[in-house]
Length: 203
Length: 207
Image (cartoon, rainbow over all chains, first blue to last red):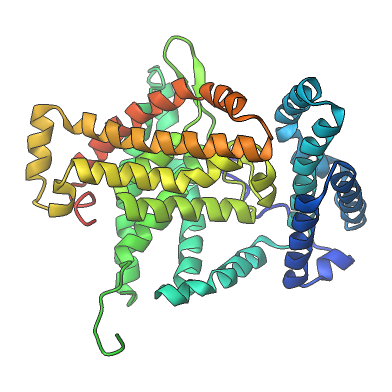
């Protein structure tokens, strides 16, 4: 069991149509789905889009296990929501609410399966380029993103070590005792990182 | 403004703090919860990390750090609670909570800065020490965290109304389930922030 999040995403290399589509085309596709769902009068639209995405995702190689991994965490909430709306407003509204959420879960799976995470992050940094207008530098957002991703394993490790230390001494895991040293280690790490950036000519 | 020599609004140290606290928020969100007290209910640390980031970094840098965390999560890095991530979160019932996080960190930070002016004066911790002696330092940080708590309630309830299509009243009742845990986390975040300020008096001073 790994302790940290899977920072590489769930990209699986392939040669399908969706794998080869450029990022801007995928972005337009996402926009189109969002507009269609937002403008849809009732549940058949999100249902049809979910089915379409399920078929095209499966064609691009998303397997049953991966679909399940994407949908399972949301299942308890979806069941609760479905029950609530069936009881208060009827089955049609329940289907509309639940399927609208499902469309985007399926869409996320397809996107993550067919697009490498670094490409997505580059796309977001590009989307941030209007920050130039307020005098900020989009390159710095990219730098912040990579510094953040690089730091996660260090911090997860620091908290995990403290947890083990507390357990080895037979103490009760108290959030203050666990988190305070981890945050202090985090701040020290941030200061070292800041000094390293300054030493490399970053003003 | 072309010939005016201006200092960068975000220094190298600020950028490092923002990136590393975004990572801390991610780490505390995905780690399994800590069993709390006698009841032993596992306590996830996602909102704790949001309050803490605001209290330690202040309003502006706290906002940027948590905004970076949310941005990276929406792109698809699984940094939200339960290893979730991706654009689909925006359509889910918890979208309001996640989008409220940066503003909650900002509210916690600005209110704490307003209540503890020493954090701007940067007087080497003398004022902080005075507040500590009078025992109100922690109370003031709790007040800051509570401002963040209110922002999360507003955002979360609006998200439930928009995405889960609950009537306002039912959204409020659903949100009520998170109050006890989040209130505990306000106090915990303040206690932890006091420890961090003691270890690094300088970090509280810059902005």
